Image 1 (spheres, rainbow, N blue to C red):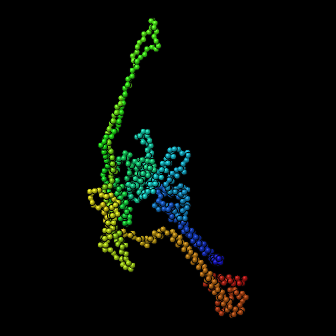
Image 2 (image 1 turned 90 degrees about the vertical axis):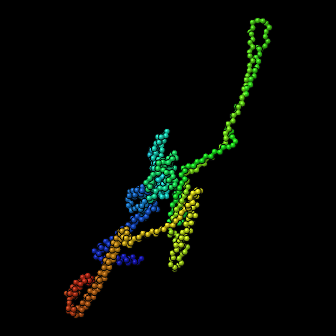
Image 3 (image 1 turned 90 degrees about the horizontal axis):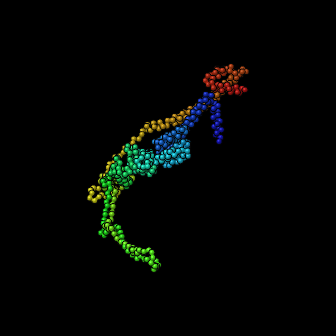
Length: 559
């Protein structure tokens, strides 16, 4: 650790040996170097070079909310790359804390519901609660749709209207979905069906009340009518044909995934029957009783005689009542039995219902690049080490092409339905080879353009390095100049002392009657022909610093 005191001592001596102007200049240069280094470090730490949230793609609304939150927090070192947020690497935690504080983090599934429950107030009215709940539902459905493959942006709007066509009137929900597919592609039938199902089941809305707007395709898709019919802009045949072609294409492309740059096109011809329903009734030979009724009737009659008064009649003749004889009593009972039977012929009902618009003829066209056959030949015939590469002959390429085409036909044929009996026997799978022209490589940027771009993005760093380097070189030059000046002064001092000593010695030898003020400047040297005053005058004229040093040494020795 001795080098630290030594270095400090050397710097201290060097600083004390400098003139006031040199000290001021040195201080300014050191300050410039320190400020330049601090500026470089600050530029390095404030450069937006790290993507937040793993490079997650944000929506326009999320980018706007984050921009407002970061601006409110006074952070301006961020940048956007597409729909991704980029921040300085060293201040990543500061930016995330600002987003959390301002509630501007990117939304996930369920975030809208969580925010609604968090901000719920017991004093808000019912209408406001319903609006907040509907808004959270719209945000959650839009986030779910954006998670689909090939979907870039989506928004959902739900409205409730009163349906006066029914009694009593009731509320009816309707949804409008605006979707932008990735790039410039339009929505396909599968995506439209998925979006409609998600909104219908997730929002409790009838599928016929969901309208999907495709921003890339510049068209909208109405929901199916509730009666099962077709709307004015719907074509059952075209929609079904497109859906089948997409399904067969995806299936065949997956099967041919090992063939690079294979082009697959599928054509589907449908049976134009919308629905085929058949009812078969078969009657039995023996009748089958359907209903039997039995009625019974039975009649009976019973007669009984009438008796006299009870006891014996008196014998005396007198005034007495005359007895009237009553008619005999009778009872009749009728019993009747009737049986009725209703018969019908037995029958067996068989109803067969076949779906309509089914694929009747499916044809596939597959294109394979010719460069693929050449790669196969090179793989089968590797070039030995030290030998020049050879090229295949046309016959060899044709043999490989025929074999590969047959293999592809055998792989694709089972994936499509068989041709109906009596149809054209033309092959359903056609494989052809096409010439794939090599894509020219993009021109590499020249050295001048690359250097210009690099300089444009790093000119501040280069400028600061230049200032710092200039300061270091200038400071080193000043230090070296001071050291050279000190060495020159010492040499001049030594030379002057030597010359003065020689002059003094000569005068002592030749002029022993040197006056009592011998070291004064009035002595003369007859031998040299010049006086001491003349020598000092010449020395002062040639090197004032050395003369001053000599005089200072003389005065010091005299004292």
